Image 1: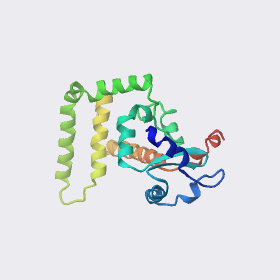
Image 2: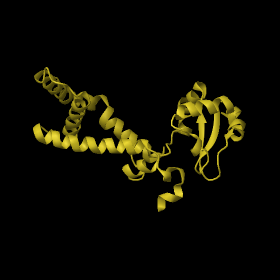
Image 3: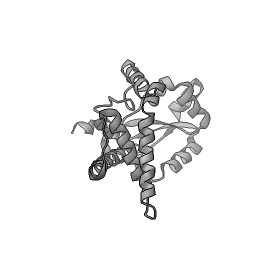
Image 4: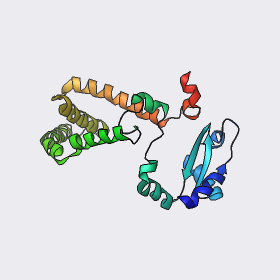
Length: 205
């Protein structure tokens, strides 16, 4: 990336004092970033509030960042919603890449993704899929909400793995709907900008 270091320093999409480039982004971010790439090149920087952001708009540079230099660029800049939902970025998604993160990842891979764990939960997953197919068959002629069906199946698999039991009937519908609402709200908040993300000093207010 050394050959692009000078370009990063000089290629600045200028905005307004304090606000930076925020007022000019518009609704179609990908279009705006593509337009800026035409003007400033495949890699440039801009300020969103007082936060400096570097935009990469080239497949070859993206490949170098996410694959060849992943150990340098692996840390994620968690927004305020992510920090709140993960107790300050303590989970595997938002934790900084350090010894603690490597320990979490090692445990996750060993306990969840290893061949032994997958084989151990195979019959459970197979049974829940069979039940889901059976529910679709029993409701033949009626609309099928695949998102709800798949969410309910996944929820039962996770609950059985964690606590050794599943939910059935009205209780499953009630708990499933509550969990679904919470997950939907969290995902929605993670994708929405917060003023504190661009002006971190406001997070203390």
